[in-house]
Image 1: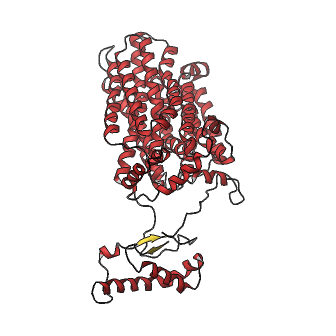
Image 2: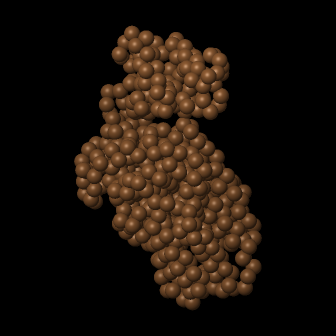
Image 3: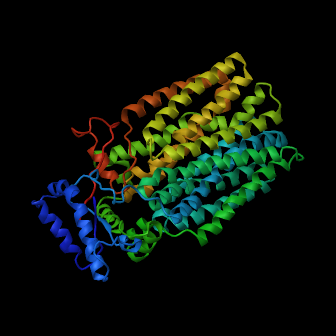
Length: 557
């Protein structure tokens, strides 16, 4: 890459060709080799010409506005490493507008987080107030995730037909209705019904949130911005823990209603923001033939519409491919199959490792070890703070260290923490149990928490992205439902120690699978991803764990 001349200078083309001719070769690689010795002279000539045209003395340095006339051009297959000091290299920071949209979209995930956090404590109060059995508590806790599957199952229709933005609005309305209904419930049946409604809103929101962020984020920062969804979930969990602690001393029948009712605040705020701040994504607009609107959004996101042609090309290619459920469930190419297994497999793995068992039932676990309720609820806040802090740290390294290293470190830490948690219960050590629970949550938030939905949002081709995201969400929520709604029964049958020893083995097995089969996807645009997965297995790519750098598109503009 080298710095060329702006289009508004009449001699630009001539100057460029002069440099090419001086190299003595029409080959771009040879040109790139010759340019380091000649470009300073070319710049000096341009300065002289500029000064002469303005009537100034030859050799007068260019002012800042004049320097701004230079722009970057690409030359054939020249290596981007051949850079001179006056070139602008590397990714530019995403605009404030992109940050704002990612922040608003990520808030949607806080709804699920709040429900997870608040139900861990509220379930204790509901059980005492209505004298529920452990099986009824398991149903109450797990039914939301089960019904999130229903929301995810219809989400792709809404996402593809109504658009990403309107889907947000729908999910907020449904969630608010469900939360208000739960707080006002007079019977256990009423409470279950409104948890079903809330679960549908959660499923729709989880499906659209990472898709929206991935489609408005620059590829260089996509990992960090998509991870905001997981940060938002953790912030929501923390807020749920805080609400539980704050309302713990209210009279029976009121405490849990106040805890649940506060969950309507966030989606109400988000509803207003979606109507006033969020535009539709450029990729969906191009998919619908609304190129002018897409161009306007791209200019606000990046300062230019240079990516529009790439998006158009990708959309044109993918429109010709099968886009029904058959294309999702029976991929025609090896690359599409690898992408599907990667996105759905990681979504499944996130919830098979007992994370929501610990979140929902941490108060019950610690109470069974003899701790008092106030200490237990205070410990929840500590867990929430550590969990949120680790996810923020992870967000800074997703686009530098990559997805794969963080995921491996996370799985190793989770496996070790689960094993030691089993030891803690076998030895009846409450302090060790608290330390292991917090260590597990920290390891989860450092890797598999943020990586899961980032991978799911970026690996699927555009023509099946919404449906594939739906499938990943279904796999994630179904697994969560089974694990969370059977915890107490499993613990009674195998003891707490046996339960955690078993899941430490599952974590170890997951680590081995990820180490062998998961590819690294950092730094690749959504349009490059399909070609990347097709290349896995070629002679220059010995296995899925290898990082493949895609050829950079280079052209003279």
